[in-house]
Length: 276
Ligand SMILES: Nc1ncnc2c1ncn2[C@@H]1O[C@H](COP(=O)(O)OP(=O)(O)OP(=O)(O)O)[C@@H](O)[C@H]1O
Ligand SMILES: [Mg+2]
Image (cartoon, rainbow, N blue to C red; front, side, top):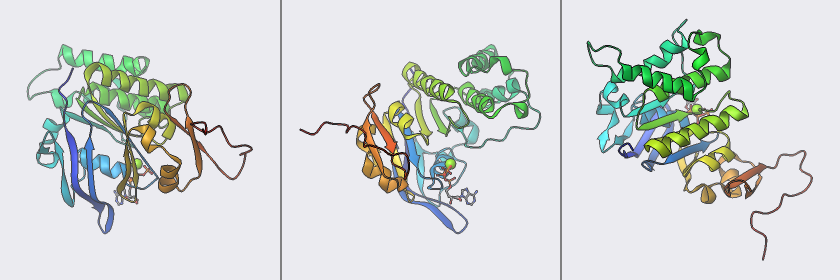
């Protein structure tokens, strides 16, 4: 098992030019657990992940990894402990899958040192885990959206960090690959104690896979805790402005949110807990 790292944000204020996105923000990521962040479009999820991974400098407050400010930690040193899969990563033109995933090993390479067998093994394991081994020689810009997304996940896995931040890792993936990626991240968490923080739009998958669910609204934490306490009709209404029904997922016991749109709602679904 890897060492459990503490990652927290305190008094964080983030923004771009004259736009403040997040202010007075505090978050403690549970070490060695899976945290999912949910919230409406443009509420600041990606901005938060960028700040937590040092790409965006806070206006106020700080992000602390093991008590040390990430913005004062050299990028390469940080990248040996904390990895980020951004929402829309851009691959160098013409790069092959194998080379891109290999770049995940950069933080582990020292000056003058050669590519090692350990690097080879890390890349091969990442390609295999994401079912992209057969794409190794292909150019990344020629892949389908879902194939490309899995290749980016492979690159993040090859980095072998104890803390992994992923911004919508399941976008572009078909349903079986979504489940496969979330199972894979859970394997990583269970086998190596990797701390995982991921932004997800699918509330039901978030509630199923997260130990800790954080719902953001208006640049603040609206609710955080166990999925059963956080994914409620009140939260869905406050965070997304959507009426819904929340029942118990019969396969996991976690909450399952059914959106109530203006159409196709013929009968209320069974309540989560039968009335006494
Ligand atoms: N580089 C940038 N320059 C200026 N404004 C930005 C920049 N990036 C994001 N923003 C703005 O900051 C706000 C938060 O954006 P962010 O990308 O963090 O949202 P998000 O919660 O990740 O949304 P989504 O669910 O659509 O990915 C938005 O209003 C967005 O327009
Ligand atoms: Mg985003």
